[in-house]
Amino acid sequence: MMKIGIESGAYLDRYGFAEGLARMKTHGYEALDYQSFADTETELFRVSEAEFERTLRTQRAAIEDAGIEITQTHGPWRWPPRDFTEEDRAERFEKMAKSIRGTAILGCRNFVIHPIMPFGDDRDPEPERLWDMNLAFMSRLVEVGRSCDVVVNFENMPMIALSISRPEAILRFVKTVDSPFFKVCLDTGHCAVFGDSPAQAVRLIGKEYLATLHIHDNNGHSDLHWNPYTGVIDWDDFSAALREIGFEGAVSLETAAPGRIPQDIREPFEQGLFHMARRIAGR
Image (tube, rainbow, N blue to C red; front, side):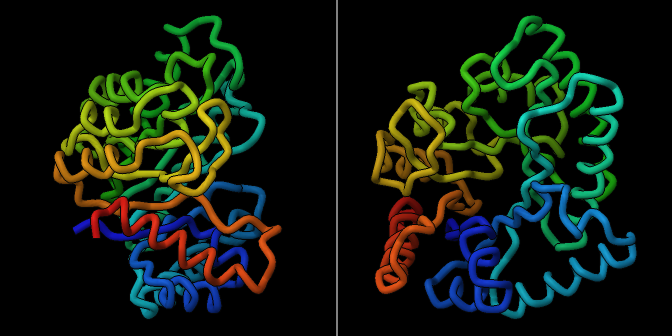
């Protein structure tokens, strides 16, 4: 049975760790997408290794005590991308490797990461070089994952200009690396930016390679992170596709109640978001 999950920013960042967990549990969530590794300009990446581990073990205990499972973490991501020089890539690799170790400390097996973008997010002048640089980088990262018993999940992207963005390219890349520690994270909103069907992407990727999901909607043009059923995606077909392949992971929302929602209607809004995810999971 698919679990129902959501990104940590929707509750833990908004309400604080303890209150956020309590609200998640009250609303019915069973799974968490831990996204505190995404921003490496935080205190978590400035403390000592001992404090880093102590912090994560404390958080893990609190999350487990709340009856919630960390089903995926999100790796380092910065905007705009800076991956062109060897020094940039070495810095990213170090932070990603640390985040993989952190994922293992949290008791989680799935670590989601974007492709590196050495030419930026809007240019791809040398597709073969982009591929080769990613292949060298991700092959090394997968070995870190193997050493920590953590699966690296390669995410499809919304960048129209990049040759490694769409699900078919991501799947081809994952198959090229050919490791049980390298799988696919399917982002539904990123599919929609290309006009691609997330349901067909699920069927293309299949159970063997599809490990994690990022669930959100948009207008078919921009990466807006709208709630499901508010944009262009056919969610009934997507739900059917997950059941067809026997997906057993978490239907994990990468969206939240907007900050402008008045406090008096925030609670029903958040409850409604959970029920959207529950419908997608067929529960």
